[in-house]
Structures are given as structure tokens and as C-alpha cells.
Amino acid sequence: MKYRIGATAWQLSCEPEKSLEFIKEAGLSFLQLDLGSAKKGWPLSKREVQKTIEEEREKTGVEILSVVLNDLCENGFSHPETNEKSEIAQETMRLGVEAAAALGINSICVPSFFDNSIREPADYERTVSALRVLCGHAAKYGILVYTENVLPAEALAGLFTNVGCENLRLLFDTQNYPFMAKRESGPIFKSVKSVCGDFLHVKDGISALSDAPLGKGSSHLCETLEAIVSSRFSGIYLLENRYDSPQALRSEADILERLLTLAELSSL
Image 1 (tube, rainbow, N blue to C red):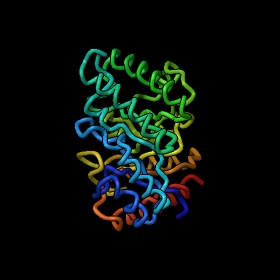
Image 2 (cartoon, helix red, strand yellow):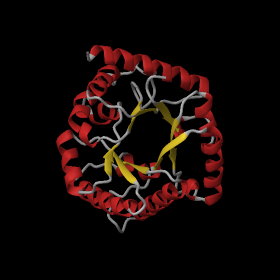
Image 3 (cartoon, rainbow, N blue to C red):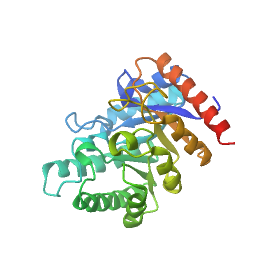
Image 4 (cartoon, helix red, strand yellow):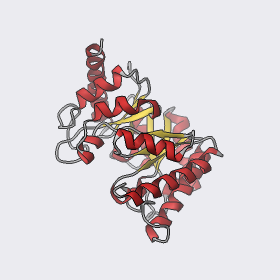
């Protein structure tokens, strides 16, 4: 493939330990893994699970780009520190760094959605504080921290300034802005390209996240891809629609490649 394309493990119809083989069968090379939920004891933090992942990585050659802390969407750090959910979030972040370090993965991803959304000034301040502490801890292991949120471009620039850590990056997503914040993704990407990391999420939808094939939703995906390509993004595109089989994943990866090729031609 001309473009580097992968997927997120939590959107594949298999257990996380089988997701690397799923990616290989689709003919792709990149994967994001979820740390897992607090209710299940953060499975990826367990050494026996890590050993299985290491064996699968060796067998398949699939590159694991990051450990994602999706449980923050259920137990966020945007609550006051004395809140039980905030205490769970602190443990999620600690275990996320440790799991990434144990597996030799150089980044973790921190979503600020649902229970961890930034709605009020106090949420913002807690987010700045949590990211600053997390970045400091992760830096000891050479790990990057990706924040995923839908702040306006100006507020996002302020977030990076206020956190003030060199290992902080943005995880951009093509659908989150139009669906969650009613903002066009393309102009946002152009404004924040300088803080984007080496990979981003691609999905599409109409009435929910990830509920439409690429280019068939209401997120103006083609326009967003044109903005991304014209900004000279050279990183990895991670598909985050839902996939029931490696064949379905490969089919949409082929669609994404065609859309990116058209976006590239449009930017000439």
C-alpha cells in the first residue's frame, strides 16, 4: 500500500490477543491496543497477557503504536481528586505507562470524552494538571503522551502551552470534531498540525460514531482528508470503524487509500 494504514484493536471482532493476527490477515501493519477496563482489572497490565501480546507481535510483525486508556471515558480524571472515579483514573494512567514500558511501546493515548470530557473551566484545569503529571511520569520511560479531545484550535494551543511538556502530542480524529463539537475537522487539523503526532484516527458516521462506511457519513471525511494531505501529514492512518473480519478491514483500508489518492490529486 502507498499509505501506512492500521486499525484500533477495540473495533475488531476478536479478543485483543488475537488482534495482531487479525491485522496481519488484513495485510496491514499497525495497531493500537487498549489497556482494558478497570472492571476487568486492566488486562493489558497483567504480565501473562503481555507475554501473549509479545509472542503475537513476534509472530506477525505487526507494530503496536500505543496503549490507549479508554477506561478514562468511564472513569475520568476531570473529576475532583477525592472522587472515586478520579482515583481509578490515576491508577489507569499509572498502569498505562507501566504496560507501555513493559511492552516497549513508545506512546500512550488519553481520551477526553464522555466521563472525561472537558466541559467546564474546572475540567480544563484538572486535565492540564493530569496531563502534566502523566507526561512527567511517561518521560522517565521515553514515552509520548497523546491527548485526544475536541477543544477548539485556540484552546488546544493553550492546553499544550499550559501543560508545557515536550512529550505531549495530539491524537487527531476525523469524526470526533463534527460529531461531538459540531466543528469542521479540516480547518482544525490545519491549525493544529504542528502538535499532531505520528498517527491519527479515521472513521465516519451519521447518527453515531463509526456507524457509516468511509466517505458515506456526515463528517465531511473527504474534505478532512484533503486538509490532512495538503498539510503534508506523513504518518499512519488508523481505521476506527467497526470490522467483523480481516477482509472487511482490508476492504475499507483499500477505500481509504483511494480517498487519500484523490485527496492528494485535489491538493496539487
